[in-house]
Every structure is written in C-alpha cells, then in structure tokens.
Image 1 (cartoon, rainbow, N blue to C red):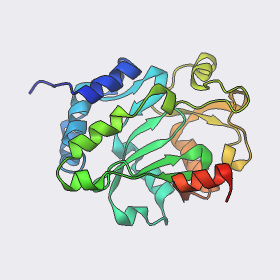
Image 2: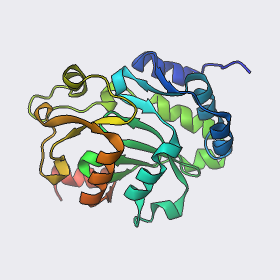
Image 3: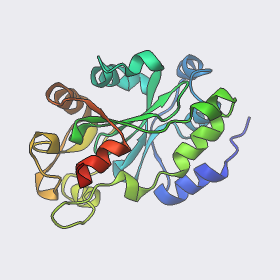
Image 4: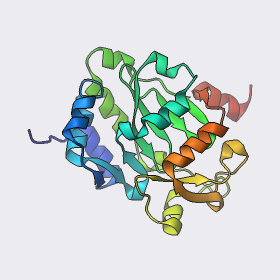
Length: 225
C-alpha cells in the first residue's frame, strides 16, 4: 500500500527538511514492533527508514539499538514497572525520546542534565485506540529550535556551530559538553565535543543521579521555593 502523508508529519518535514536514510527497516523489525508501537510510526519507518535530519540534529531511530542504554538510565527508577518503553527518536545532543506502549511520550532522557524528564504522556488517547493520533501530535510539536541548545554565554544556537567545527553527526555520534553541565560544566560551544553516542550515554548514566524531574521541578530550580 502506498504511503499517505498526513498533515502533522508534513509539517514536521517542512521544519526539518528531507531526511537522510541510514538504515532500511527489515520486515522482522516491523513485525517485532507491530502492536507495540503506533502503526503510523511503522509506516514512517517503511517510507523513510531510520534516518536523521539537519546534519543529525534529530534522528528517528531503531528502538532495539537503544534498549540497553535506555534500561541503564531507567534502572531502579520504577519507570519500567509502569509501562513498556522504547526509544523512538533522539537529538544530536543525546536526548532520548521515549514512547510507552500505554503512555506514549511520557519521558525524555536528558543526559547533559543527568535527569529523566517526565511529561504528561497520552495515556487517555492511546487507551481509546488513538495511538496514531498521539504519535502525530508527538511529531507536530517538534522543531529545529526545540531540538537545539543555546550557548549560556552568547545565547546563540550551538548545534550549527558544532557541525561547522566537527562535521555532520553519524548515527552513532552525538555532541556533548565536557564536562557535562550536571557535573559542573557549562552549556557553551567552547565545551562541545563530538563523541561516540552509546559510550558517552553509558558514562553519563554512571555519574549522574538520573533524577526524575517534571515541569514543577524545573520551575522550582528556576525560581526557587
């Protein structure tokens, strides 16, 4: 059956541009995730493969490749007991975007901050058989700006400067800050390095608190109280 574009993913592509396919998705992988992840996501996989956008600013990924890393970050946090989660996308700075089979995009792992950020999720729509609609909403709110990070000293976006210095990101690479902000480093272009994605994520998981944080926690950090 021919791929049919939907308005929300069309909007996503207008923001991020044409994807670079890194890996075609096998029938075995599609069969493995059918009934676990939204059908619409599998259709994107069939059409575009596992791919990157804007030199690696955003990736649509194979969850199987990230399973071990995700489990390292979520271990002993009670999250894996509440739902079955899969990494479906990530940013060039190593943020892992999780999709729960019951809850949707309820968590994002943010390695530079050493936290697991809890969102509202989409349990109600998924329970009502609208997982594809929830997934469309996931992509609709993504933008190059929200996937990028700003230099705390200059307020300028960091990713484009990093690509100019280090080159486009490969599927197994990420940009990181040395040292990581949670370890006393600063989120500046001056501290950026290009590193092996999985090695770096495992290192950051070992040295961070892996605290579960939500919007209320961010507000408290920003304004006190």
